[in-house]
Length: 302
Length: 315
Image (tube, rainbow over all chains, first blue to last red; front, side, top):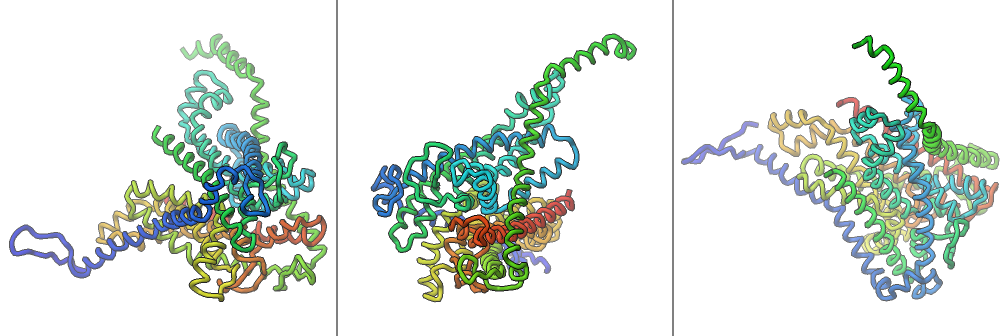
C-alpha cells in the first residue's frame, strides 16, 4: 500500500501514484465513464423510442394532416383518426382539473395553515402519502363501484373525471403543501403583526408565494391523468365512440385507450395509427413536463 | 409604563383586536370548507376499502377461501371456473423478478453517478431527463413492449421460443419505467450521507470509486432498499404494460419467455368484459383487487418506515 514516489533524475519530486495505487486510481477513473454511460443510457432509450415512433407514425400524421385529428376511429386504418379521443381527453382532463385543484389546494392549505396540531393531521398526511402509492387500477375499481354503479353515473365523462381527480389528488396535495411550507414564516408574521386575519394572510401573502410550486404540481398531475388508461378502462370507457361528446353525461374515449385499442389489433395494419396517436399524446405530455420543469427552475432562481 | 398598559388603553386595544377578529365571521365557513377538502382524501381511502371489502365478501360467499388461497389454477372468466390466486401472483412475481434484475443495477449505477461522480451541470441535465422517462404514459411503454421489444428484438434474437406475449418484454419495459424511481430515491439517500464520512475516506487515501462503494453505498443502504420497494410497488400495480405485452393466460412459472397473466392483467381483462354485478366475473375482480391493494400498501408502508428511520439516523 506504500505510496511510491517517482523521482525523476532532474527536477521536483512528482506526486503521481505508481503501482497498486495507480491501478486503484485508474479503476476509479474508468468507473466514471462506465457509470456515466449507464446514467445516460436512459436518454438513449428515450431518443430511440422517439425515433422509432416518428418513423412508424410520423408519415401517417403528416401525410393525412389534419384528417388524423379530425376523423373518428374507423375499421379502415386509412380513415381512422383521433377526433373522439382528443375531445374526450379534453373533456375529462378539463373536469379533472376543475375538481382537483380547489380540493387539492384546499387540503394543502388546511394541512399547513389551519389544521390543529394533533394526531388527526398526522393521520391525514400519512393517508395522503399512502394514497399516492395506490395503483391506478384500484382507483378504477373505486370509480366502477362508486361513481359508475352505486351513484348510477355509468361510464360517463363525469365518472371518468371524478375517478382521475381522486387518483391525482395526492400529487396536488403533496406538491402544494411543500410549496406553502416554503413560503417564509416571516411573511406570515409580518402579515399577522399588521393585523391581518389568518385567511387574509393565507390569501394575500402565502398563496401568491406558493403559486409556482402549486402550478408545478397541477401540471404534473395533469400529465399523469392525461396518460392514464387502466383506471378509465375499469369504469367502462373502453368503447367505440364516433360522436363528439357534448355533455358530462356522454360516453367517451381518451387518447391512451385509443392507443391501447390500436396496439392490440392483430397484424400490422393499425400500428401506424397507434404510433401517430402516441406522437400526439407524447407532444402534449412532454410540453407539460417541460413547462413544469421551467416553472420550477424560474421559481428556484427568484 | 407597565401600569399604563394594564390600564384603560390596553383594555381598549384588546377590545379592538377582539372586534377586529369578529369583523370576519366569514372565516369560519372558510375553515369549514378547507376541512371538507381535507376530508376528501380520508373518504377516498374509506371508499376504496369499503368497495373492495363489500364485493370481496360476496366473492367469498360464492367461492371458498381455501380455493382462493390453496389452489393454483386461475380460470375465472370461463367454465370450468377455478379461482386459485397463486397463478396470478406468480405472474406478478415473474415480472417483478425480471424487471428488478434489470432495473436495480442500472438504477443504482445511475444513482451513484449522479450523487458521487456527476458535475453539477451534468446533474441538472440528467435528473430532468430521467424524470421524463418516469413521466411517459404507460400505454406508450406497452406499445413499445409489444411492437418493438418482442417483435424487433426478442424474437429475432431468441427465435420462436419466445411467445408473442411474454413476461420478458414486459419486464424490460417495466425496468425502463421504474429505473428513474430507483435512481432518484437512492440518489436522495446517498446525498443525505454526511460529508464527513466521505472526507474521512478520502483522507485515508480511498479513491472516489472506493468511497462510493464502501462508504456511501452502505450508509445509504436503507434508502436504497426503500427505493427498490417503491419500484416493486409500481411494477406490481402497473397494468397497461403487462396487459398488452405479457399476455392473458395465467401461468405458474418464473420463466421470462412464457406468457403470463398478472393480477392487474386479470383485473383489466375482467373490467373490459363489463361484468354484471353479483357474478363471479365481477366479484373476482374485487377479490384480486383487494389482494393487490394489500400488497402495494404493505410495500409502500415498509418503504416509508425505512425512509423515516434512516432520516432520523443522520439528523
